[in-house]
Image (tube, rainbow, N blue to C red; front, side, top):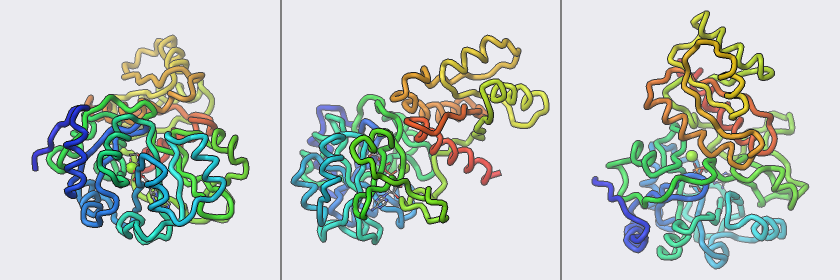
Length: 344
Ligand code: TXA
Ligand code: MG
């Protein structure tokens, strides 16, 4: 199959492909999505085939207006109204009890459906012109870092999907935050582009899945799969800043990890490394200032892909405090680091 490259002026063509049951990747503010008509079971199934994704992992429906929401959910709890009012359109996915209109291929047999209104003009126009909710996971091959540019999408899916809508790189760079509003209290299933602190400003009673200490299963089914992993080994540094950097020198001296190395960290840590003049040549991936919390996650996935293209074998990553965007980044990097270990 030849994958068409569509420009911003060709959303009508993209919408036509979706209505005919085809697959179109499109930009959103979080990451690029791989879209199919969310009410067409066969089209939805082809998403799983193109990505190589297990079909027991449910998909998010992307909507452009309230009417679409009412069509696909069974009820809208008051706390959901407040969260939507505060954060939609934006990087927040809400899990509702689903209506009959949602095919079980989307929800993977669950009684709930995940819904998001993206904060992205092209995405919203595409959904509007398609006239239906668009089911879309991140547009990567299953297990690879999520794509934050059209190039990343083509690296993974060229020849496997009908078209990609060419847009700018994603602003947020991390997937949406998922909050389940179908139960008694809102529950954070996946930290993402909206921080838990922001969610709790509107819904202070929000709990965190898996944090009760009772060993409960993660409730976003996708959290159990291998995720976000480049070919390079990802090593999460430990300890204070000095210890984190000392470990890299030690790894080099003792041959603990394969070279070439890269370091992905905030600019402040990179400045300290550069000032040390340790004599060890290493690629430096700066995530920007640690004080610019909102944009810290923007380039994480892009750098992981860049590391592979540059032939880097080990990416050392700074450990961030698990609050605000640091919580999201650590969630993804722990998975990337863990996946590397499993594959050894
Ligand atoms: O930012 C995003 O959320 C991007 C863009 C394209 O919108 N999409 C995305 O989709 O990250 P995906 O498929 O890579 O991740 C969706 C996550 C999975 O972990 C899945 O298990 C969870 O959402 N999920 C979907 N439906 C659910 C449901 N009904 N209940 C619980 N978790 C659900
Ligand atoms: Mg994904």
